[in-house]
Length: 220
Image 1 (tube, one colour):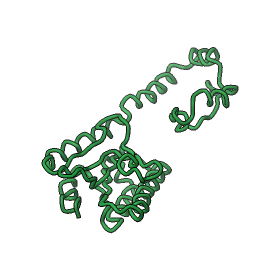
Image 2 (image 1 turned 60 degrees about the horizontal axis):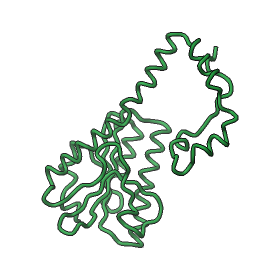
Image 3 (image 1 turned 30 degrees about the horizontal axis):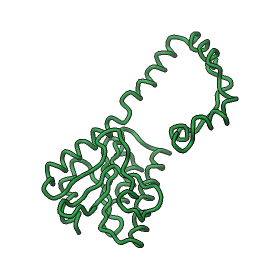
Image 4 (image 1 turned 120 degrees about the vertical axis):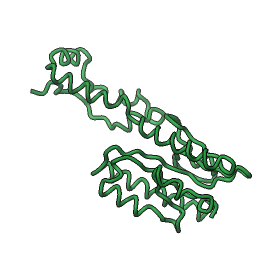
């Protein structure tokens, strides 16, 4: 028996989160006629078998710590970077939940969206030397990995295209960690990404950071 059948709309998850671009009111106006009445939902929950409630609670509970491992990864990388390079460079960006740094705020001539997790500047003149993207993959494969692969490759192409118009010293750092990194397609993508753009792209883990993020590379 389907305890929740009938009348529920299918809304794009990402669209419902972009409230600055797509208002809640517009979603209600467009799809509201398909929404399930609260009274019906309450009745269905009241008749839900106990084992279903346990399963639902477990699924909802997974979201309590969603993103925390990614925030921890970013925080540890920031700590490492500041311990090693505080006298020469600064690293900027949110350590936890927070607004990404848009490339257009660094380079006003850049058009479009290009969110970065962190920015590396040289202390002496505040020149931007690198931008980075941090991802913790607990598990990943299939379509999700395909999305990540295409997204990272697109970041490189956008940076290259901008550099041809407005020459920069910009390097791209892809900080990646977690057991999901060992998925075949994810690992292959990391290997293919590393070294692109004549060496201006590097994929690192926390353990590899000291060997791969160096002044020679940042300023080369």
